[in-house]
Length: 233
Image 1 (cartoon, helix red, strand yellow):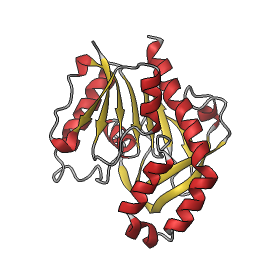
Image 2: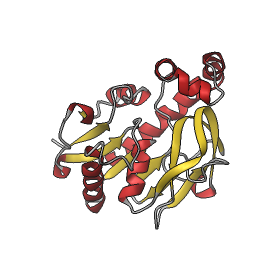
Image 3: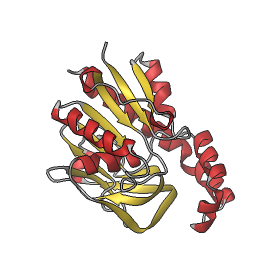
C-alpha cells in the first residue's frame, strides 16, 4: 500500500502537531530517518512526501551525501506529480531540486514571528481563509529563491520567499508543525545560538505564550488541507 513518507534529517525534528492530526485521520505514514542511514523509499510506493528540517545546509552535500540523493528523489517524485510538502530545510531542498539557489539571508530568523501572505497565497489550498499576517515559528539562516514557474505564497521583510507552490509541491521556510514543548527542546539545545541573536529563553517563553497556541491551530489546518489535497485523487 502506498503511504506518506516523512523524510527526517535529525531526531529533534519530528512531525510535531502534524503527527497528531495524521494519526487522528488514520493516514498511513512512515518516518524515513536519514541520519540513521535509512534508504529513501521507492518513488513508486510514495503516496506523498513530507520533508522536514535539519541543522545542515543544502550546500553541504559533501558532508551529508544523503542530501544529494534526496534532491534526486524529490525530482523523481515531482516528475510523477506526487504531492510534496517541505519545511525549512525541506523547503530549501525542494527549491534546489527545482533549480533555484539557496543562500544565506541577511541575518538568521529565530523565534516566533509573522509572515505575510501574498494575494495568491491567501487563496492557496493550504492557507485559504487565514489572516494575511500569519504567526509562524522560524529557525534558519538560509533562504531559497523562488523556483522558476512557482508562485510566491508568503514573505517576510528579510526573506521575500517564505513559501511557494508549484503544482502539487509546497515549500515552506517556516515551521507550523511545532508544539510549545518542541520549541522548548530546540531552545535548550540551541541556547547559545538564541543568545547570539538576541533571544533569551525568557523572551522565547513569552513568545510561546503569545503565539504558540495560534501557530498550532494553523498548523493543524495546514496538514489537514495537505492530506485533503491528496485524498481527492
